[in-house]
Image 1 (tube, rainbow over the protein chains, first blue to last red):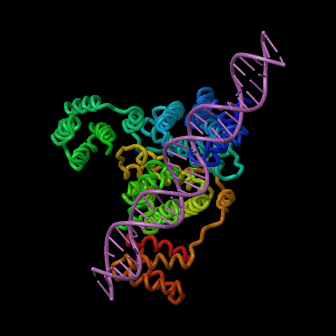
Image 2: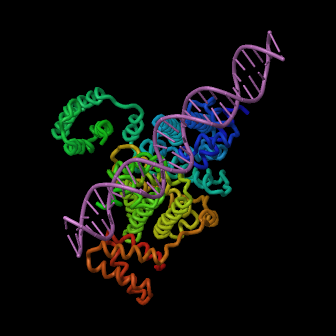
Image 3: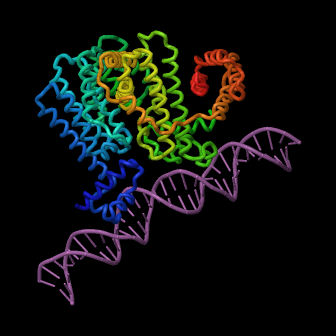
Length: 277
Length: 277
DNA sequence: TATACTAATGACTGGTCGGTCATTTGTCAA
DNA sequence: TTGACAAATGACCGACCAGTCATTAGTATA
């Protein structure tokens, strides 16, 4: 086994047990039976290691479930096979799955957050494709909620076999979740995550928006909006962004004028992030 | 604001942002504008701080949702109100909610794991009570699965408003989750988590509150509360706990004096469990 | 004002951290 | 056997960690 592989496996095990922050490079190298210096021949830093781990296993997980969805022709069993693939992948790489669950909202490292968000979007896309294929227009208004339900199911039930040492029948589990997903897809009628809302989660946090972009969008919205309150608020906020002059309380108030207007919700979100409110 | 409170609030904010491990005592004291030594006048250690935080907020969260379930009489809206209470509590204490989600499977500290497990069981018990009340024998075989679904819903949807800066209509969200829960309760037929399996997860030794702890909290509340009814009820209950003398009806009456007072909800919940009412 | 007390400080300790690098060890072909 | 080169080591670095404690500042009483 290559030295790099040896380090990866030791790190995997220790990160799963203790978490990333709480595991030192020293511990990893001792566990792998090599010197500390040797670690830095294979990896530039401890951060590069965790990013490598996550890249490797996330791509494996994602291609696992994507393969099932893309290649399974029997629609009647697709949901079942999907859950089976997901749980088997989690079980096969249970150490990684533990890290994934522990670190997914934990880490300080900016690159890792972006990465996680990126992979999360990929998973969403696969689930969405599956739901559209199975239920088509029937889930037109509920599909984004269904994505969240499916992910919620996987998350809670994963806990059972990852963190308790109980042997589970994953086939039975998948069967049971497939039924639940089917029920929700067929009968659920209320929408919470609209197309628009879903987009607003998944556009933004990736790259930082520039001042110029913000102002451009504001100007666009000023043209669109007819109500005077919203319009005036937008003008004032535009001036404030070009040359900060308003007190935080006023800015907050102006933003709250916008937050419920259908055409201004998005810019309100953007501004709140941009102004770090 | 007391020094202890100041430290708690600074720590809450920093833990939410960076996680427990990644936040140093130095940072907390700098943020609170006090010296490092002063920290150790209020807390024996950094561990004691996080345990205190978790105890405080988990009890508040649990008594919040318990209060809704116990006191809401309109069964038709109970699920909705339950989700509303849970999400409002998360939103009100969003810094804590972030810590809770980040650290719930993260921590190395043994005491914290036991504590989390204990609180998780309390939440299960409340959800279970609600499901049994609403659906009775109908969910006899699926109730434990339903608990996990409810927790899964809360977990995934919490992410939306905790980690993205998007304003959400929590009423609409609760409504939508209530519908989903209803659908699953009414139509789901496959069982995965059997009574037996559920028990095997929860075998771990339970954490019992001692008489001394209860009395200590009551004494603390007596100081805080101004209203005479609540205050007198607390004094009587304290005497009863030290030396049982009151009839069950009287005890029940005294407890119901407390159950709606914001500062006494928690002790009311504790006493109800302790006295097994 | 003098005294007695508590509250608060921050320099300090003993460690551990991630990361570096001069040195040693191992492995070749010549 | 030698010399050239790569692989591997672990002592070492500066930074930071949780936690301590001698000292000082602040306050209330006599």
